Length: 107
Image (cartoon, rainbow, N blue to C red):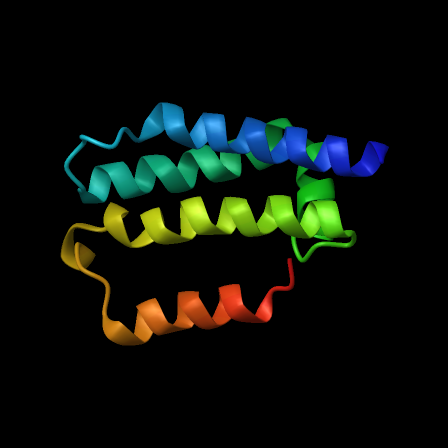
């Protein structure tokens, strides 16, 4: 379906933008966290139609978009806590919330 392909392309573009800012070897810091947030919003401002598509379909309007959204959440959700210097280790509650979200999201 064309919408699913467009949605996946938008998620890939957003992910690559975020990946360009943060490498796996970089030490978490406040500056890095600010750069990631700025990149996120910068992508949304630079791609208004893509941003609208991501916001409308992030919950998964179709099976394919649900899978793409879940995969993106898995990558970025797990890395979210790594970006803040004070939160190198996730609390059990936060980890449980991520797991519950993944369990509630149908494939």
